[in-house]
Length: 385
Image (cartoon, rainbow, N blue to C red; front, side, top):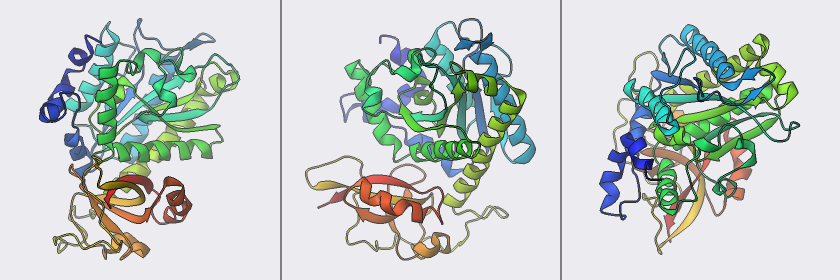
């Protein structure tokens, strides 16, 4: 891991603020929330792999790098045609690599996104597995579960294992886990929303749904904006391979991702409470201090636990760069029922419903909430006892 910080040098600035506080181990990515606060103006599309050194998986005479690029270009064309206010940036439009060193190649893709002030990063890949019967689609976001704590997860054994951060290294694992924790209060929630929207569109096409998964992927770690990596099918499965290499299949996949992008753009606009025609807030008089929560107690503002707090769960409806009252019309039938969780970053005001003891209790209400707020999801917070 000697080259870990060197190869991901743009991230070093995020380590500075917290170095003195937590033994130089934890990064801060509050900066990234600014990408959400301005809305979605620039979308960066990354065709995974590329060049002679990084072809990705190869089956049936097809190389993953080529499939990724074909879908990426089709997706970009759809965005450019149907969302003219959004600028599309490609990390590559031809077969190329950025460096013979993998970590530098991945960092270069993130650098393109940063230099173009990207608001959303979408990396397109195809999957592979030892078992040729495994098929389906999944979308990855930055994170870690107990399964991902193992360095060589089976579904990533061919073309992605070298792109995972080495979580067996204690120092790296500590840094990355602190970063993941911080994501909840910056832009990680938007990555999750985008991933879920993509999967929902895939399901409409009849794909086997492998869901949204969390993985400590280097390219997602390096991008300071909402980011997803979507796996459009398994090249190791004959059915998936035939589909994702066909013109029809690639068009349908690109259209599915585009529909998710379109919904995401609208959700972010709504979460900012911005009028799409004027660019002004929907209620210019909403500048007051936060109203008191309709809940019996206000949750703690910090993500750091202490002996005086307990972990609770809620459903986030919206987030806003501005402080609005809980009686705002955008909260629909949850006006007066929502409460505000204030956090760090540009999208600092989270409008939440419920105060649940565990995730399962919150899950029982989530489907009903999503009838009005499709982008709603469950969050955890620390509440003073």
